[in-house]
Amino acid sequence: MNFKTYIFDLELKHTFGLSRGAHDIQRTFIVELGQNGLKGLGEATENPYYNITVEQMEAQMQKLAPILSNYSLESPELFWEFLHPFLKDMPFLHCAIDIAANDLFGKIINQPLYQFWDYKAENLPKTNFTIAIDTLEIMKEKVLEQPWPLYKIKLGTDHDIEIIQELRKITDSPFRIDANTGWTPEQTVKNAPILKDLGVEFIEQPLKADDWEGMKYVYKNSVLPIIADESCEFPEDIAKCKGHFHGVNVKLVKCGGLTPARKMILEAKKLGLKTMVGCMTESSIGISAVGQLLPLLDYVDMDGALLLKHDIATGIEITDDGMGHLSDLPGTGAALKKESII
Image 1 (cartoon, rainbow, N blue to C red):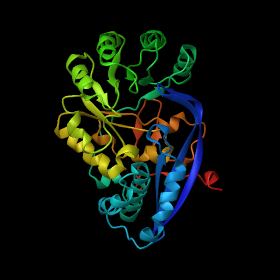
Image 2: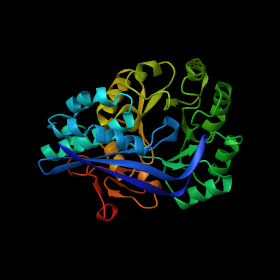
Image 3: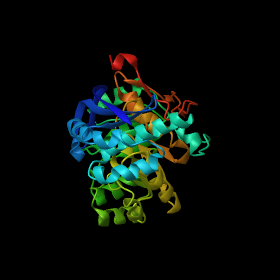
Image 4: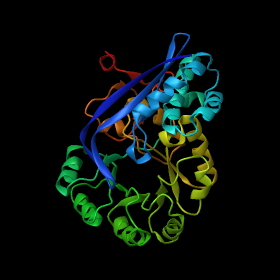
């Protein structure tokens, strides 16, 4: 197996603000795996919250070169297990490699991944469109600029309720709230009935990731469903979320790719938890990988490529009704645009 790597600075259409900071550029790391003339693509974005840089991923990828050169891909799952000892502390890079391996495997068998997994492309969830934290006027402008059937609103300010009240005046679309660990248990329980009356579906990760006692209190007292994000990174976190959250948001980069994400989603379903997959402002390479999981999900946040000024890749089509349309292309269906790699 051979490989190439690419680093891109993805320029965002608008400043992306969270409760813990804001940025205008999203750096991303692309892995291309090749075997017998076929190629697969994977992606993982840089993330300051998790202390992940593209330079770290590039350095580790080069260290893997000798073992990759002698490996022949037969199963993405076996490949994931083979690499885990080398990447157990680098799930973001493992994600990029795993997506690329799954994409390559799809090319080898000449099938889209979701079809190979026997997932039926029926009753798929719509993706939300994210409105990041900014001034109220700019947040309103973003909603008006991008009419959408479903919005995720980033919160964690001193005037969160006011933001939702004002945004509700300009759209009837349902809202999802992502507080990004910015609230207290008392705030969450107090805000929930107000937000429910304002057309909010659920609240995502209101508390700090390790505040399990606080989440137990919120779980028992909130009138809105609570979805785990930062509290649910790895497969072993799914069981812990039972009794603390109503659902889980699985991120491919945090758990290490499609291979562990599928296991996490299936386990969550067995435990009666709602299932969601989110994104980290990836290009269409990462978003097309998320798309392969759509038939398993109750909710999805796969708007990352829609937030970019220029997408470096082609892949899953997301239409203005919020639907992701799965293609018949093998693997994930993603490809780098020629102009991106010149």
